[in-house]
Image 1 (tube, helix red, strand yellow):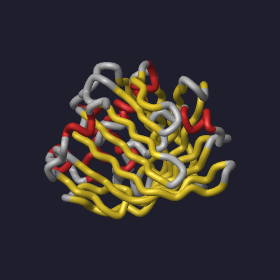
Image 2: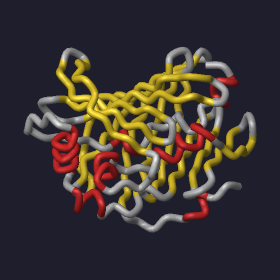
Image 3: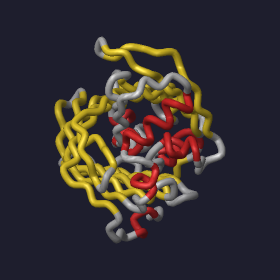
Length: 249
């Protein structure tokens, strides 16, 4: 990964919060509405999901780059659908990204603090979404479209595919037909520095927090840029947070 590549990540280094929710079930839903309903119920149900007013996740990451492996710590703080804050720290770099509900920004060791716009800002805003399937029924953003895509296979297993377009960014969710867990998410976006890129998020090791299933491990890959493995070892729900972290500084 080049220095320009690192600068151009624009908040993509961390797995979106939406990618960390797990949907598990048994019914073989077919229509988009049926898949959405099954996904919401299997995650923990609408009531449990909507009880989450704040969530803070802390853990570690290992990034594979052309310079070698870079290990560090990560933190994600979210007020669902309203604000999101992301932090990566290592001996090699520190990167902070946030969306305060109106302004998206990023700060790192290479370019200082910059305000994001276009799909860069939309990508960060989208990461404030706690559960896209709950959002399908009570949309928080006006620029979101849902489509059931053709079924596909991931690692030899049959999957439903739900395509979600939000803020000019196309997301494809792959749900295992037997478990209804999201095995993978593919995100297509146009980065200001890297151009058109495809981000692949692979999820694993789900745990239940306050009645809601969330993945504790993820693998994020951007070809020719980086691969990053993240493990969340602490999840705090509905604890007080310092909202000044979301403000550009």
